[in-house]
Amino acid sequence: MGPGIIEIFKLYYPIFLKGAVGTLKYAAIAVGFGSILGTIIGFIHLSKNPVLKAVASLYSTVIRGTPLLVQMYIGYYFLPLAIPALNALSREHCVVLTMILNSSAYVSEIIRGGIGSVDIGQTEAARSLGMSAGHTMTRIVLPQALKAILPSLGNEYVSMIKETSLAGTFALYELTYTKTLLANKYLIWQPLFIMAIIYLIMTVVLSGLVRLLERRLSAGDRK
Amino acid sequence: MTGNNSEVLIKVVDLHKSFGKLDVLKGVNTEIHRGEVVSLMGPSGGGKSTFLRCLNLLEKPEKGSVFFEGEDITQIKKQKELDKIRQKIGMVFQQFNVFPHLTAMDNITITMTLEKKIPKEQAEKTAMELLEKVGIPDKANEYPGKLSGGQKQRLAIVRAMAMEPDVMLFDEPTSALDPEMVKEVLMVIKQLADSGMTCVIVTHEMGFIKEVSDRILFIDEGTILEEGTPEEIFNNPKSERVKDFLGKVLY
Image (cartoon, each protein chain N blue to C red):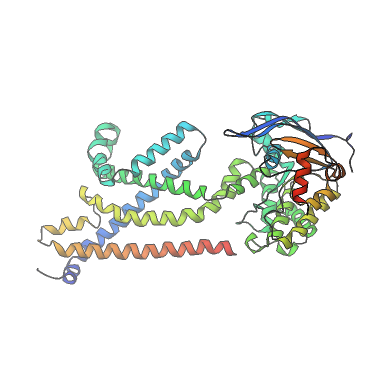
């Protein structure tokens, strides 16, 4: 069996910690930029234009209906061939781009759902007072929608932490990639458990923070 | 009471509205005069609320016109112009629709400051006077979550009043209230009506309709089936449909 988990961690902890930081970083990039793009797509989906609506709907259906790993292979091998401009990016960046696009589809649904969760009566009341459509969105609907949106974005980040493990397949330095790094030292099983424990700590802690945020936001209702 | 020879504020011509295959309004014609209090009566699903919601274009009619102060507002293309018209048409909803993330004060002032560019201090002064008028000045800094149903509806009424409308539309303003809160809201509406505000009211409060209305429109199956003074409608209804309805709702 060789040395135990604790000895291996003590010996190689910088490698694991660097991997964990990589995981948090890639997940943050994916959800961060994915949120910007996803907000735009979500609003397009909510727009009245039937063509734009259909495009946004197709985008989110296709991306959410196919595995991220397949999308990453397409991003890694095919995108640079299909779109020559992407040759300026490294293959690594193409994988990151894929993660951003993937996250944006999920975020667009979060935005759509969040805005849809606000009672239509709020919009009607604002418009009946003579408030413009823009102000109705920014001052009345969005502040209320954020209560639903922010915790969901937090959960999206937690899921993305796990999803980024696929990026190791393409030699992006994240937590799962440490398995590959340590394989040449004939360490097979110990890194797997160390990785799992680190993932678990990250997701449990962050999920806890999301729940805290959720409770804070809903406390506003009672005030 | 206002005579029919006073200025026409709202004129509705051949108004049609349908939702999918369901024709809700099938050609409504009427005039509402400045200072008049008009109540809409009739069975549920007859088109009362839809008619009311067409007056400020919350529902877009398929056919027909709504003239407000002489202008056909169904022909307005610019959103900004329509917003300006809506500022002059206050509306109160069954579900109150106060803004839960804003204090009572901000509920009133937000549209004044954003759309009418009234300075914040002045808007707050007006808001405070209005809150005093309806008996809830002590709730100015509370969020709606801390208000009772009756207080929320009174807030919704003064929120609309703050825009200085020429007419107020009430869409079943007391239907979602606990029974003991109905009166406080009706008193506020009565006060408004007595002050000369033009009011169009959809309600099932028959006693209130009788007392406050200058004219009653009985709406059923998408048309005005009968209209008249409360005296005429309650004591001498012409159509069997109205007689039947009153027989069922009056205890």
